[in-house]
Length: 230
Image (tube, rainbow, N blue to C red):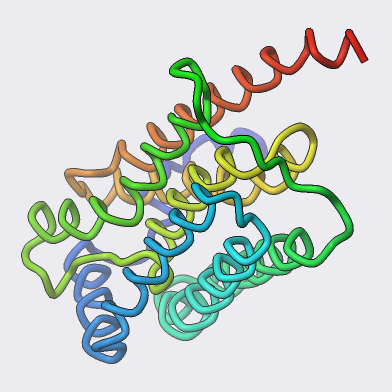
């Protein structure tokens, strides 16, 4: 049995061609027009809320992005191409529940501003900005036109990338690690899929995940002396 599994490649688990997948992106954008403008505004609002220390409403808005992209894209459309889409969609719902739970749970978000130059949250801001503002342009210019632009909140890849950056800005300790598991896993999954589909930006989800994990480790190390003093 193990020998049989070794004969499979990643390509064997992607049952569609690049043209079929990216045409699905086009149809999704056509069906959801003009929600793209509201989604972009919502993503930018989340970043502004985090920067102003309003973590709870930011996480609540972000949870809606996971519910929408998980249902409207992964389950409603992607599952028609790949049976795993239903399970991916449920994972997105689970992440939405996690974010919504953090938005309403009785804990105290940190309210300190990013005053220090060497603060891992600046790295989170860069990743979040890339997911919200740069991702549509990258996917449009490299993917064949604005009809294929991927917008945060509507499609899963920019939603996961932007979320990782926002979580690095908003959370610390075990909450940061727990809330980042599903976005990190998705970045790995989609990076493999995009590589098979020969998308020019295939390395970006994994690169974003690596940067955020580095920021998470950096944050944990920076907090260690303070925790030891308590």
